Length: 267
Image (tube, rainbow, N blue to C red; front, top):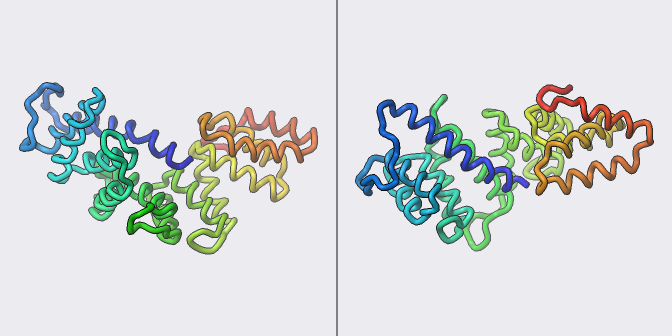
């Protein structure tokens, strides 16, 4: 679930970054895919060329442009190249190569308010995911403590709902540190207020298990209206298990409450 949500946000971020960079460029001319861009061109021109080439299905050209731009220190190009290695998109799939590039982005840090902040955040999330699962046939082994620390950094410093959700899941399972249900509930509550369906479902399940049957079932039911089809199965399992246990009155009130819930601000 994490990977699907994480990947789905990539092209959106790249598009936004390009739009922002173009706006900051002032008098820069509109990009022409046939323009004479070479390895000696500036990093932003190479990035623009790579982005447009990718959108036009010219992935080999995109990879080449991103590589040259990355060598010139362009963070967005590094990030795009790492994604292509992680997904096997236009290159041979290589998680360890992706890991190394994400690590470079993370190590360079980011200045407050920088346009590279989004790339930095996503690099940290990618690294956390790799540490959580490890990379086969590479030096990157499962390190749950490191994964939990990275999720905490992104959750607390940047308030990213996916990081809050992943951190809470690790706290509930006692992965990478002691189990802490109350802290997990705090992070889940923050994430679900930002509209994270998975956080809403797990938060609701905890409430249900604690005896708040109506409220918990309402959150689990509302989550099913927010989740993407490919990510809904486990949430539906939670909801159906609770629904089968609840009495008829609780079910009816919970369904009514679910339709009224405002994910962004419901208490």
